[in-house]
Amino acid sequence: MLPVRYDRVALFASGFIGLLFMLLLPMAVEAFTLLEITIYVIMSLLALSLGFIWGYGGILCFGQAAFFGIGAYSYAIAAINFGDSTGAVLCAVGVPAVFAFALGSFMFYARISDVYLGVITLTVSLILFNLVNSTAGDQYRIGSAPLGGFNGIPSIPTLNVPFSPDLLLSPEQIFQVCVATLLIVYYGLRWLLASHFGRVLVGIRENERRAELLGYDIRRYKLGAFVLGGAIAGLAGCLFANWGAFVSPTVFGLAQSAQIIIWIIVGGLGTLAGPIIGCFLLQWLTAYLGALNLINSNLVLGAILVIFVLGVPAGLVPSILGLVSKFAGRRSDEQNHQPSAVGSTAVRQGPTR
Amino acid sequence: MSGAEYLIQTSNLGIDFGGVRAVHGVNFSWTEGELRCLIGPNGAGKSTFFKLLTGQLQPTYGWVKVRGRSIAGFQSHEIARLGVGIKTQVPNVFNGLSVRENIWLSASRIKPRYLLEAAVDSVLERLRLGAVRNRLVGELAHGQRQWVELGLVLATEPDLILLDEPAAGMTDDEVERTAELIRVINQRCALIVVEHDMEFIRMIAKTVTVFNRGQVLMEDSCDSVLRDERVRDVYLGKQLHAGLLGTEA
Image 1 (cartoon, each protein chain N blue to C red):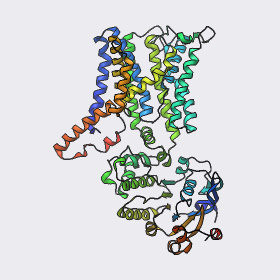
Image 2 (cartoon, rainbow over the protein chains, first blue to last red):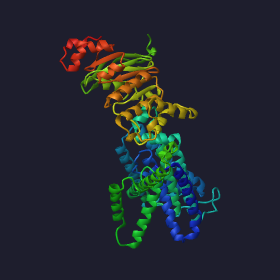
Image 3 (cartoon, chains in turn orange, blue):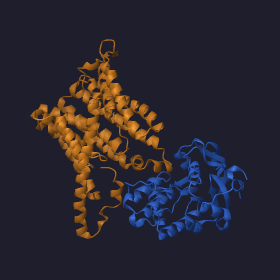
Image 4 (cartoon, helix red, strand yellow):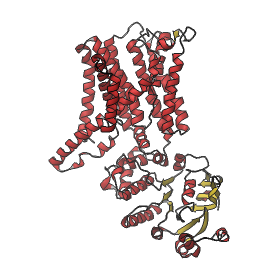
């Protein structure tokens, strides 16, 4: 665990770098690269949503893509109907949250075990895939929005300045909106994890039985985390639908859900930065290998997953932090012979990073 | 005496596991401030009875009342909120968190923010865990983990505490320290202790309830229980006559 002062510095530094990234990158790179990076940012938001509920709530949801897809479709349908993206964004967060609430109530209040939870969430996303996939034809429409079946929904109205449908955001501005959203969600989750709710949630992950015996209603806490995770995934879906102005049933696909899990394992489960870093690295690698056209990128991804599960089971971020704190701890020991730099505040911030 | 004056009362409590009567016909009551030990040989139904009291198992017949309220159908956390603190046989602690964070999680359910830090410190001090407060609980020795769990239970300030084999796997020194802790805790709240270890029972017990074959064999002061012939027979595994089983003290 890092001493407090490093923690603070890291917190501000990461925020500062994030802001610089958001403001300066559109000037520094070409439009194509910027679009590419925008999709990395959007997917990191999705990874972050699962990283939160899995890493801190202990809920392994194999169908996080379900909420992502519902968010994307909700946005598309609402935006086409309203003509203004303001309400559509709210739908893209609200509909998946309500869906997560319904699904989560059923799973947590029925005390379904972790394995079945994985099976149920996976099945739900596959059902959604098949459902949406089979809505080709003019008879399937919601308001003025045709669902399009396997063809998806094209030419979705993209984000506009709130309540001004004529002022559309440029791709650069959408990039900035995506980065800003990621930063806000990241710091919001850090704040949440330092709060009472977050600490109890981590306690439940550590030992459900004990948390119950202390008088905490674990079902409510898990449901709360699950709904929040669903809402964040929906928000990512909304940004995704904006990114290409297009959404198709593949957003519900198995590959999508599996990918997120790999990002988190590589980046580091039980951290918030890990899923983001894992997502950036692996997406960049996939794109690079794809362009290289030498070797199948899925094969490489599989190999990386195996290497990490066997060799670096904690993931990148925890392993690197472990090394840094070892080094920093040794130095502060030499300086003042007091290992107390890892004080009570460090413990308080322990579960969040 | 009306039911409400008992902290815990059971009537004709029983549970069957597919034809096996693990516990049957237990009438048990327990008053404010009392320290009661439950003993009995392996398979006597102590732990099952314990689980019935804590709502981990639902009885086949009979009932359990806490402060005159039936706990049938209650969830574990609801029973805890009635003021019942439970320490399980295998330590149930938050292994990945520090000792301090463990106690904090427990105390923060009942304490307002401005009293919280002081409450956590006082529990740490009472259990003499101050020196290891920032260590991860998973890294501690077994005995210390048992105390951390005791601390978790104490921090919720229950009126009644149920301890399932609190001295299991402890060294002699640790057992003595645990006995001392239990006596201190008993000044403020009532306790039920399920135990095997007769030495430990002798250190803490006033009243002892003996279980055998799912029933209460006898209930008396510690000394007379330990002198009792039937109890010795039970502990030595001697076959009992069916008639003897029926006679309750």
